[in-house]
Length: 168
Image 1 (cartoon, rainbow, N blue to C red):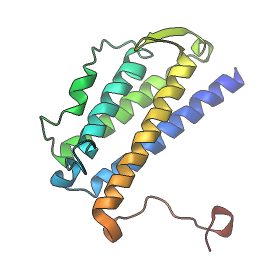
Image 2: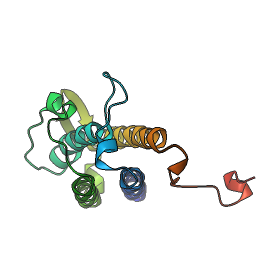
Image 3: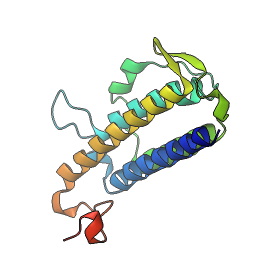
Image 4: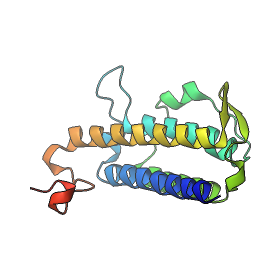
């Protein structure tokens, strides 16, 4: 069970760090920037967050945590409601806490348990990995969009501290 417990621990830490990167970027944007679409076929930071929320509620909160959830995926890509930055940050933090609670309560022996999610046959382990990589992908998109909008005003999340990490 040591490997299973370590897997759960590492996944929990990686989810937390992805949420930290998202919060770091969103905190630097104003309401207009959060909902700005770079082109007609691009998503805003706000739309990406709506989508991430739907995905994580389906894959983690519902499929693993047992919560009732009915997803309307196409609705996630419509920016009908412009949610202010402070409310988005509260929602992101609440989702991070919920995800952490669920992950840390996963019994190690259940990692190979089967789940049917979004038409796919998954295990708890594969669902966690899929949800994590999905979140990390979108955290990168959010950071990239923030950097494009803020240019030199963007405050980086992490910088190398020593030569081993890549500092010159």
